[in-house]
Length: 250
Image (tube, rainbow, N blue to C red):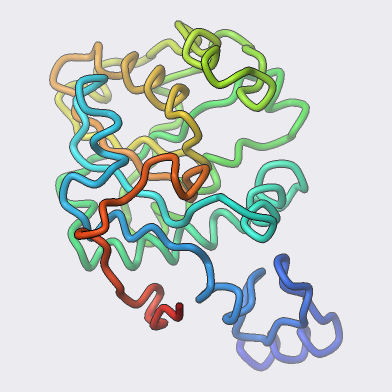
């Protein structure tokens, strides 16, 4: 398979979605140079990290993490490819790599199922896919945790959060989700998955609906968190570590 991939890469060279340089046969979508310079959060290494604290008191949160800060032109390229440019497999690949890293830190301990944030059927019909489901697939691929794609649905086709002012986002996602098949998640630990945490309003709305089911516990995992300073990490808790087995470079 490696030889076939090498030949295919030579005949049909692929470019990095961030820097547009040619990828090697061992690279997928993002070159190694761009990958190691992503603004990683390292939230999974910080007890009571800012993302977890943000959700305290809103729903029964166990743990939460995001891979990188979505705060610049290059990270925007990743999110746009996943969300709007019909390349959800980029999210799946990144999520699979991230999940392998998180497994070493017991992030998935006791988690019973993965639940991707659902799209309304009209938006999914227009886009032809739900990017959060692809991210969930990547995590499931690396962990073996099953995906429950039918336990919560978006029943109101609300306006996109990107088109709403920050202080209006909580109201925009109010009561837009509804749970189904509650017997499947009763007493279970759910990993709620999305592409980007912006204000956290969509995740909170979905999590609060799931939390109505008896005994449900919830953890959160997203690929990105919008803005490096949106949930600032405390300086004394900053940690330098390798990501995907590659040392970070300042």
